[in-house]
Amino acid sequence: MSAITAGFVPAFLGGLLLNISIAGASLALGLALGGPLALLRLGGGAPGRLAGTLTAALRVAPTFVVMFFLLNLLPASAMLGPWPVPLHGPVVVVLSLVVYSTAYVSDTGLDAIRHWRAGAHELSLLFLPALARALFVLVMASSTGAAIGVNEAVTVTLRQAQALGSVGDRLLLFGAVILFFTCLLQGAFLLVERLRLRLVAHATSGR
Image (cartoon, rainbow, N blue to C red; front, side, top):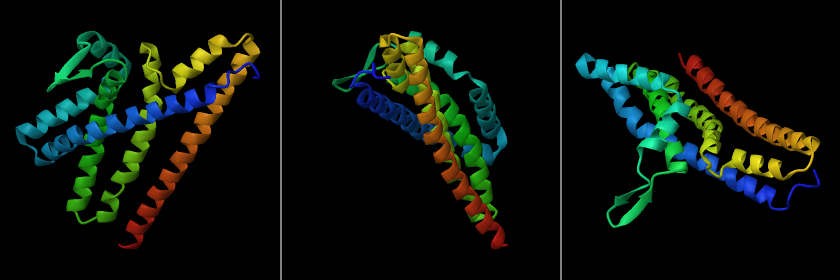
């Protein structure tokens, strides 16, 4: 592992920050789009059925396929007033993950609203740990950006692996990165699960 360049760790952490930024942007857009879908589904009627059908379609859409579809469909940039906005790389990954986050928010948001209207306010708050879990899933899913050259953590790792001379060093690098992600995400999942269990216990004790 001594062959790893001195700049790997800062580059890796920068790539991880990009993963988190992509996940956060995807979740924010998912909230903006999935929330209205949940309200429409709750209202029923033709709009509710349409919103339910759209949610079901988004739920099964493969992120990888959507990403490459957008990559070939979108122009290189668009104008936001006088400013050009790039529509490639991280933006494509964000938009492809919005498909999942919108469906997720529509489903979990619908349950949360139903609990709130039924008076089970503590159970409706389970929406918050559910959002946290979705954020962690999106962080992992954002690594699909490596396939289109986005400079996120997996891309940085693969680039470093190519620079290593031996298979053993590459395996050690991959093992260290996998261990890092496992500890980071598993720790985060445990914290969210602890919060979820506390909310459930509080709701149960209040009955």
